Length: 465
Image 1 (cartoon, rainbow, N blue to C red):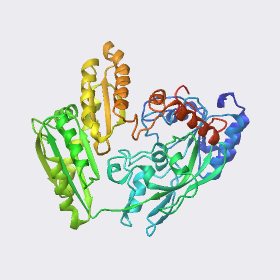
Image 2 (image 1 turned 90 degrees about the vertical axis):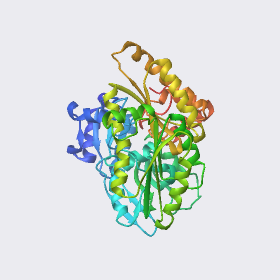
Image 3 (image 1 turned 180 degrees about the horizontal axis):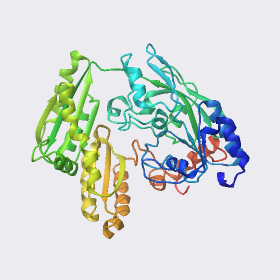
Image 4 (image 1 turned 90 degrees about the horizontal axis):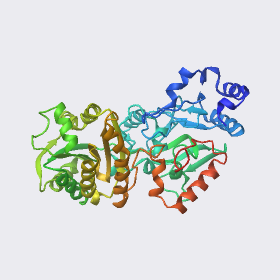
């Protein structure tokens, strides 16, 4: 049932729960909450702003009783359509649940509500010499709840892990309206099943998170940055394998292929050498007494066949200058083609050279420019298919090319998403990666958490449009 087919009493009940000012029903007010950064749009029937867990429980109960779909939402920064209400119903916005409930420096934990901005967590933790490792590119405006829903990470994941490795426990409300507590408040604990890691990355299809215990790490005393430029893609890919094959693990290892380098050079010709065919941004952190030795090991691994230049930054100003190359890429991409398919595939680090070779061949076969960059330290490459939908051939070839990209990734023992999630964009591809028996088990888990199937329907499973 959609909200439009429910009685007015249902809407009145929502207003009773959260207040009339916190329920949007006017089409123009609802429009903004029908899309995320995937640019996919589907109009919700109502938008409700919750202030606490009790309100969420009452809203869930009402939706269960009326069979109305419910989609939880943070700030809508996701890129796969995960927050788009494809079946209409209620969008439950958690953006106003912004309280940092407690910070415990001795335990290295911070307890937050789902609407807290990632940057706010970092600032609160930094006051105590700590930080929360997950650092997606949207950290200045994405919510912790969204980070948890999609297991969003970023460059630091290569050393510090993803969200799953940096959350100790949760409070959540299942689709059935049951309040549950998962995990622990300690860094060790093996009592019961690990429901915390199950809910993280489930894209709001199992439960709505109302509180999270985040695990903090000490801020490093020192950070050093290297920019290694190579003649070609394979030389850079081979360097990634060498860097990740030695004991000194970098805290960031970013990759840009030749097409990405060419785009940056158009915006800033003086930034890179003329013969630059690919580059790596490498960062190491640690104790001041050890940092030079760590950097030397990573620098030695970065050297090899095809290296054009190796620049080092020791100060914040120098670091910013080197990172300017990477930051110039996103605006450059927007100017190249009006349409883009952006996928965040992952392959084993040792297979990165095979991936970039295969992508280059697919680009030539389909006549679709493919620009690659991303978090090479854990094999997480952002593959960007750039095309013009006004060009009949490119429009025809874009999706078949993407289809082959996914075949290539799976052939290399990779996975179809590293941090963006499944949403609607990859929903109909995941049965290529996950076998039928495992998918069936996942569906049955979903049914246990959400027996009425109201939580974020049309997501995660193929055929659930």
